[in-house]
Length: 369
Image (cartoon, rainbow, N blue to C red):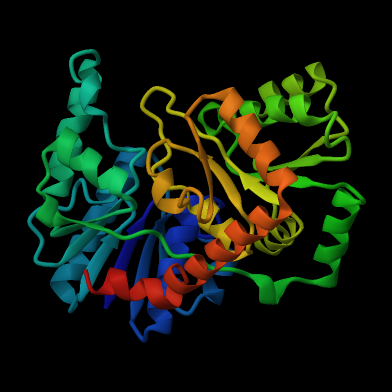
């Protein structure tokens, strides 16, 4: 039996949720027996999965300890092939167990080395993380940035870390006629179309894109920027759109379904997300760039965190200098003005994504770790 212990799981929406759910589904397809220990209350959809899901709810500190006790009991009573955890938090209380434990690392949860002398609480967090990683045999880092950060900040041996970029599921086969009509009504006759799929928070860089649209609107008057996602920065960027009189050029979609996401990407000319580091928060990889590439869409990103693992500069997309408005605007204009380059970058990205990132191929990397 393989056990997946995770705070983030279906039907919640998000990058880690998609990763852990995709991993469980792929392990079943690889003929493994799987049990998922997930946070949250039991849902009616749990029974539709081909594996068992046990849910844990309640106050977070107590929930983590209760899940760890349950997991230790499973290890004693069953033959466990391996345990896969979504982050260090899911193994913090899993000490001295006789089982192979693999922990995923995403970059955003690793404290930066240069903050040590400024914030005492980060030292406490750092000690917790180091002790948690001591409870596992291997760490699956989602990018070279995450691996290097763990070595520099936590002094973890490189032998313990393996880089495994996340796998991806695409739902093109589940697109309904209703989905197609909904997306058509949104897009209408707009062109070109730029899309961002991300939680709406300051570090994701939505404002940079909106500012670029205001600067390029005279050259591309019918351009449309689709913003899919919600988050704490949503009201702020809506105000920014109104201030720049871009209400006709920017549409906020909120959370969208996986089939709708596929349709939006298929209709897009460029996918863009321009993150920069805000405090401790940074983009560890950027799986959504692979999502766009899977659909043959060229991407624009920034040289921030692990994005350079997800977007190969001048091959699958273009990378801008982090926080540089001029660089972002020029790269958007470059791709919108050069259809041949857009198609070339999109085709390269599609080949890479479908060959290297489908769960059919990716699950073997996780199983062989």
